[in-house]
Amino acid sequence: MQLYKQIATVLGIGYIKGGGTVASIVYCFIWFLLPAVFVESYWQVIVALLITVVGTWSSGKVEIDWGKDSSKVVIDEVAGMAVTLLYAPHQLLYLIIGLLLFRFFDIVKPFGIRKLENLPGGAGVMADDLLSGVYAFIVLRAVMIFQANYFS
Image (tube, rainbow, N blue to C red; front, side, top):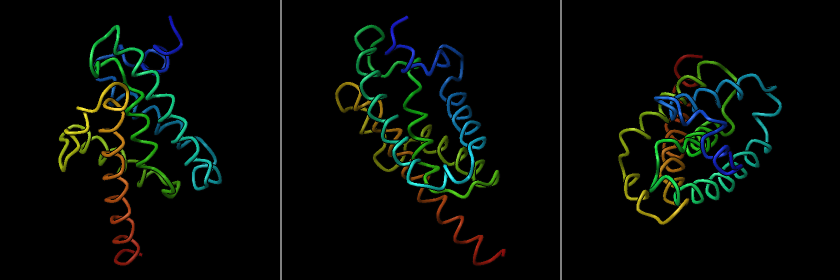
């Protein structure tokens, strides 16, 4: 199988029913296993950017074979989770809240997220999940601030 299909499907996860959720959970699992010094540093930004660039390329390539925004493409969910968890404390609570928030925004697609799917090629595949990740990031930060002010 071509490299771009392996990347787009995150090593075949995209072929599984519910692949987007599975890919998001796999990213969370890997994130949680990494040392806190890594996930709470600028390296996480570099990883998110790399996933976005490679994901945009690979999802654009598979569009020729699979059509616009195929359900097999799940690298976009990985990129969205990477954005959601940027600089999040390395704690299971925030990981779970981040996952739930990201999946909510990715599935419901409020506040202009759906419009981004109309962008051409891989940009359209990736952009809606990246914006879902940004919204989830913002709400997760609000939850963290609320928790720190009222429950610490």
